[in-house]
Image 1 (cartoon, helix red, strand yellow):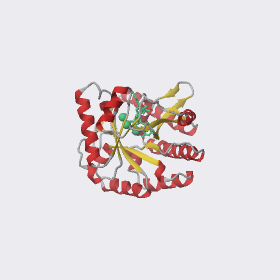
Image 2 (cartoon, helix red, strand yellow; image 1 turned 90 degrees about the vertical axis):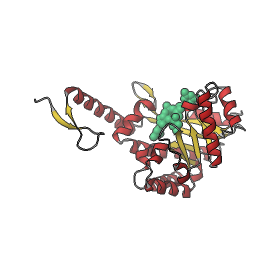
Image 3 (cartoon, rainbow, N blue to C red; image 1 turned 60 degrees about the vertical axis):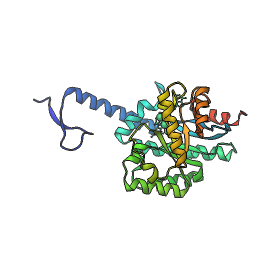
Image 4 (cartoon, rainbow, N blue to C red; image 1 turned 180 degrees about the horizontal axis):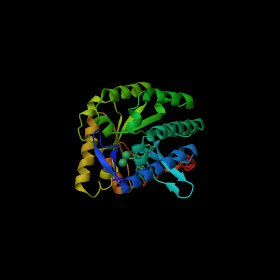
Length: 285
Ligand code: C2E
Ligand code: MG
Ligand code: MG
Ligand code: MG
C-alpha cells in the first residue's frame, strides 16, 4: 500500500514502529509547522519575559522575581507558556530558547540593580534538557560574566523529575552551580517523582510548593495536610519554602501559620512586564 510507510515513532524508543498513515503525516507536518514558527519567534525577537514578584511571608519584603516566558505573537497577541513550552520541549528548541531566557533575565536583573531597585534576585526556570546538557554550569557562568550579574542574584528553578533522573551528572552540575553561589529551587514540588531521598543528596536551597496544593490549602483538609508536611520536611532539612499561586488572604494566613517562608501569587501581583515590575518595586507597600 503506497499510503503506508513504516515510521519510527519519535519518542517511543528503538524498534517501535507505527504505520505512517495520512493522519499521522498531517500531524507530523503540523508539528514541523509549529516548530518553525517558534524558531522564527526567537529569530524575530517575539519572546518576552514577564516577572512575578516574590515576598517574604512575615515581613512582606520583596525578595525577588520569577521570570516567566511569553510569546508576543504578531497576529495572535500574547501567548502563554502552556501553549508553546511543550512544543519547545518536544523539539529540543527549549535549549536555545532557555539560553535566551537566562541571558535576558540576567541582563534585566543587572539593569535593575544598576538602577538601585530593591530587587535582590531573579529566578529562572530551567528545563531538564537544558540542565543536563554538557557544560551547563559553564554556560551560566559565561552569561553571569557577560551581563555583569553576581551569582548570588540568580536562582535556578528545576523540577524534581530532573533530580529524580538521579545521575551523577546532575549532582555534579548542582555542586558547580552552588559553588558559584547560585541558589537552586525545586519547582512544582510534590507533583512529580515522589521519592524524597534525593533531597538529602542534592544541594538545593528552596522548595516551591506547587499551586495544586496551595490552591485550596485553606479549604481542603488534604491539601492543608500536604502543605504542612512539605513545610515541616523542608524545615527539618533546613530548606526554604516558597508557596506559589497564593490568591486569597486565607491561604496566606494558613501558610504563614505553618511556617512557610515566602510566596508569590495573584494576591500580590501576577507576572508583570519588566517596566511594570520596576514600578511595582518602587511603590511603597
Ligand atoms: P511555574 O514555573 O510553576 O510558574 C508558575 C506559574 O503559576 C506561572 O504560570 C504563573 O503565572 C502562575 N501563577 C502565579 N501565581 C498564580 C496565582 O496566584 N494563581 C494562578 N492561577 N496562577 C498563578 P505561567 O507563566 O503560565 O507558566 C507556566 C509554566 O511554564 C511555568 O510554571 C514553567 O513550568 C513554564 N515556564 C514558564 N517560563 C519558562 C521558561 O522560561 N523556561 C522553562 N523551561 N519553563 C518556563
Ligand atoms: Mg517556576
Ligand atoms: Mg512552579
Ligand atoms: Mg507549578
